[in-house]
Length: 146
Image (tube, rainbow, N blue to C red):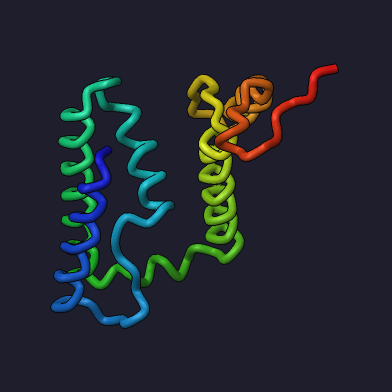
């Protein structure tokens, strides 16, 4: 998605939270984990290559999540979060960080391996295309002739 949508998405929740929020420590906006979940969900149903369809589905999903949040807030259903154990939450955050890291490897090394939705295939494709590393992108010295 174009970055401008992320900028807009960071303004509206902050303005709404001014009036309805109860915590000063909450963070709203396009954070990495939310973006990862949104991309994974929309990629399953959007038409490949059609950015308008992708943007429309992102707006719809964001609206539905906002509506569900309002309904859960009205019914004071936040207590359900107390039933999520600490290992479950920390595992989710750790795996999300790992997935974000391996998705960025291609940008760090300047390669273009085939895309996949499986982390182990992403790593395999990355190491399979490591010989095509863009040395200027990674700032490695050129190989010496032998």
